[in-house]
Image (cartoon, rainbow, N blue to C red):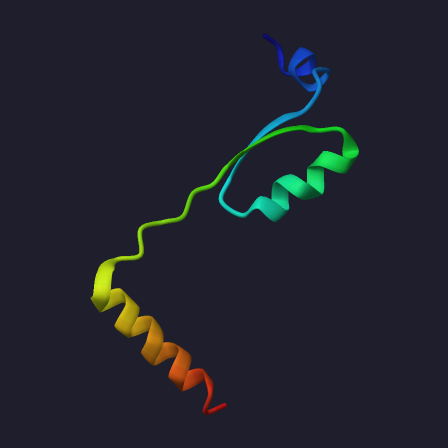
Length: 60
């Protein structure tokens, strides 16, 4: 398949993650499949680090 023939096809999108990206394409008639996915949280250690970063943001 040539690049030209590929670009002449209707746009079809697989959206992974934020559903708002899929919702933004749908009004334009784009065929969208949304996959509800989140990266692994990383456990209690990652949660503690993120909580500390959030606390530091309050000092600004």
